Length: 308
Ligand SMILES: Nc1ncnc2c1ncn2[C@@H]1O[C@H](COP(=O)(O)OP(=O)(O)OP(=O)(O)O)[C@@H](O)[C@H]1O
Ligand SMILES: [Mg+2]
Image 1 (cartoon, rainbow, N blue to C red):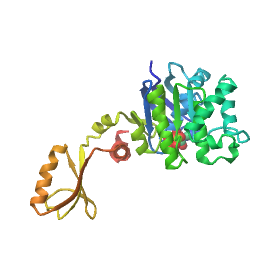
Image 2 (image 1 turned 90 degrees about the horizontal axis):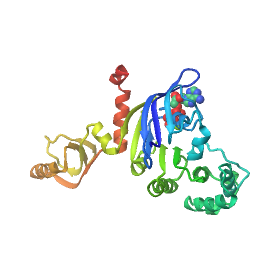
Image 3 (image 1 turned 120 degrees about the vertical axis):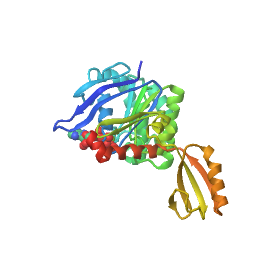
Image 4 (image 1 turned 60 degrees about the vertical axis):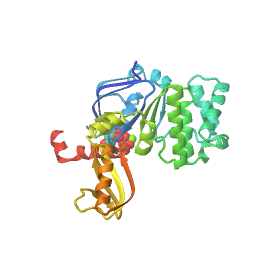
């Protein structure tokens, strides 16, 4: 059974804004799916639809076969959610918050305290476990919110910008935890993020949204094929031959497209035979960031507007 299925899903808000426009998508269990796209693309709206916080205008959706608009409580039992503004209690301590949310899901106090302390340890919040939430920093709250989402051992996690406001170390820690949860516990992760470098490290597949539409989806390799871009050879060099077609990015750095690493020796020969000096050379495949910009730029172009 798919963990998530969206079938020609649309959401029009009161007032007429079409935030999600006929999106069809499915996620298998254990995938870490990166849901990407510029501000206003429709990511949070999709997460709210998947959690039954909003009902679709058209189309169908399910989480482990359950329709969240019909049975939100059944989806909540299987899912953990982290949003940008998590609701928790300021006058309770970190561990008290976790025990409270554990009790909402029917866990005993002993169970939720034991697992809560383990989650706090993994999220490096042990020292803050007895501090009231009111005294937590933004990043500490965000990490506690992830612990809260995990307290009932969900099968799927919906994470909407889980690392916004986190320092690089904490963000790295949260991302390794996400990877571990998927790899060791088989949890499916639906991750909305703008942090493309982390997404490239953590996710197994991606969906790219813009203006409510799913522009592309697939693994990194599939998306690379989609933008039809091969490798880029990066050179740090001096005195390049004038007829070498390349793009200069700074004083000594140049970029040129190649089809494979096999082409590198012939370029090296050409440059050195012409009296050029090479200090460094590397071949790079397009990053997730390169793909993101290529696809979103082409969507914004006048041609794309005409097609739309
Ligand atoms: N409650 C609402 N009423 C009307 N329009 C809304 C509402 N919530 C969101 N929208 C609009 O729907 C569109 C999609 O918003 P959404 O929050 O889903 O985008 P997002 O991809 O999560 O963006 P971000 O990256 O900024 O978080 C935007 O144009 C937004 O202004
Ligand atoms: Mg959002």
